[in-house]
Image (cartoon, rainbow, N blue to C red; front, side, top):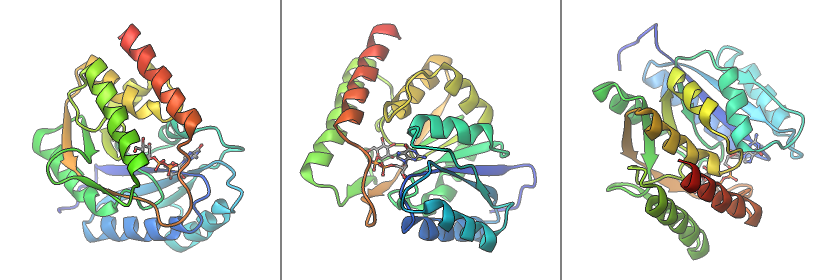
Length: 242
Ligand SMILES: Nc1nc2c(ncn2[C@@H]2O[C@H](COP(=O)(O)OP(=O)(O)O[C@H]3O[C@H](CO)[C@@H](O)[C@H](O)[C@@H]3O)[C@@H](O)[C@H]2O)c(=O)[nH]1
């Protein structure tokens, strides 16, 4: 990929108890960007993780440099949605990549996202597990049904025109993301879904790239009953208001 000095990608990595995963994802990201000659920064938004993720992040910053690793810690666990908002406020790139820090989202997909974005000058490129070539690896039946069910209900009620509404591995033009965020009211996991609905409302173009979501090896998902209830409430709010 040719170097383009005007284009910079800011990766938002929200972390909560990711001390084992963070060095691996950071290494893979830096390697991917360097090999593809892409200008980037990785913004780590840690919510005072009890496992000491921030200490690991500081060590990584010392290794890779402050230009490439930006630390934006917060005082407590304030949720995924607000972590993204905080990350965007601090991003200096003109494109934003949102992804999980737990290796569920492989950085090797990023050059494919960028290629796709350039092909159609899309506003958003979203990774999809539910189109040809995509998939999920390592989930038990309960988690598979939760994800499929969440997408099925959202698709039925909201007709989003995107096959994987709850996924979070996405590339946005920064000004597009800022506009969507302003209109988005959800704060938890439902945030991802609402973002796509708002994108459709504004008429932004969205392209999909197949991804394989690999369940984390280290640590635990933070998706609990409370998040699922929050998702259903958010879905209902959108159904009745959009
Ligand atoms: N800063 C911060 N980070 C958080 C918080 N909660 C979770 N994270 C971070 O957000 C990422 C995803 O969290 P997980 O808890 O591992 O997510 P998941 O259950 O595997 O859910 C993933 O898949 C869902 C779709 O199936 C997605 O909806 C969801 O956004 C996420 O990508 C990880 O990097 C995790 O450390 C929080 O309150 N604060």
